[in-house]
Image (cartoon, rainbow, N blue to C red; front, side, top):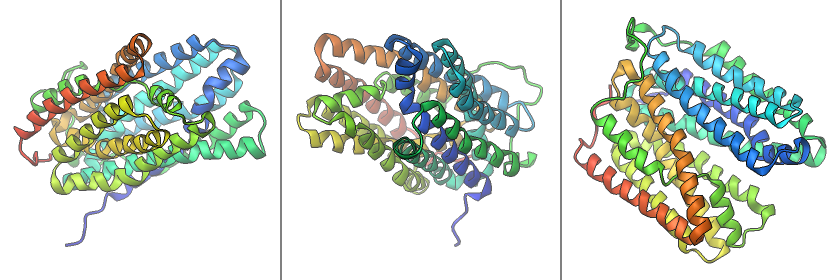
Length: 394
C-alpha cells in the first residue's frame, strides 16, 4: 500500500517555520549583546525582557487556541501571528532604548502566541490521523533546521559583509517576510467537513477533560524541571567548553533535533505515542542527572547531543498525542493549554534551578531537576501504561 502523504499544507508550514526560525535565530543569540553594548541595558533588564516575552507568548497561545476553535478561517490568525513577528525585526533595528526593545519583543511574542495553537490544530485536521506524528515531526524538524542555519548565516554576515547589528536585523527580516508571503499564497483552511468547530459557544478558558487533563497535569510537574537552556550552556563552560565554541555546541543540539524529529515522529505513528514520549522524557531525566555528575569536557558535547535527542523524541509525538486525544472541536484550546503550561512553567523552573545553583552549586541544581523529571516520568509511565497502547486518533 502506498504510504500516505503529509500533504501540501504541512509542507508549506514546514518551510514557513524554517524561514521564520532562520530570521529569528539570526537575531536572538545576539540580542543580549545588542542590549548591553549598544542600548546600555543592564543584565537584569535583559532577564526581564525575556521573562516578560515568554510569559506573553504563553498567554496568547492559550487565548488564540480557544479563539481558533470558534472561527471559520484559522489561517487569518496564523497569518496575523507570523506577520507580527516578521515586523518585529525591522522595529528592533530602529530601537534606541531598552524599553523600545521590550515593546518589540512583546510584539514579536504576541505574534508567536497568536499563530502557534491555530497552526497546530490546522495541521491535525489537514492530515490523515494515522500520520500525525509524521506531520508534526516534519514541521518541528524544519523549525530546528532554521535554528541551525540562522546563527550560521549571522556569523558569516558579521564576519564578511556586515559590521553593525542593526544592519543584520534588517537583513534578518527578509526570510520572515518570505514566510508570511508563503502563508498568504499557499495556506488555506481545511474543508468544513474535515473539522469540528464550537460555533456559537461562549469564549472561555476550559481545561481539557479526561486523559488529556491528566497528561497536562503530569506535564506541569515535568516542566518544573525544564529551566532555561542558558543554565546548560553555563554548565558546559564549567566542564571546560570554551565560550567561542558555545555557538557550535548549540548548533549541535539543534542539528540533532533537525535530523531526528521527523523520523521519530513517524515512529510514533507505527509503535504508538506512549513509547516514544516516555523514552524522550526518560532521556531528559538521564541527561540532567549526567549534567550533575559530569566531569569532562567531552561529556558536555555528548549531553547536548542527547538533549537534542529528547526534543526529537517528544516534539512531534507530543503534539500528535494532543491532536489524537483532544475533542476535535477543542483542539485549538488543547494546544493552547499545552503551550501555556510549557511557557509559564519555565519561569518557576528557572528560578528554582538558579536558587539551588547559587546556594548549593550546579551539581545540586541539576540533580534536583533530575529527581523532579524522574517523578514526572514515573507518573507518565503509570498513566500511559493504563491507557491503550494506541489511543484511537480522531
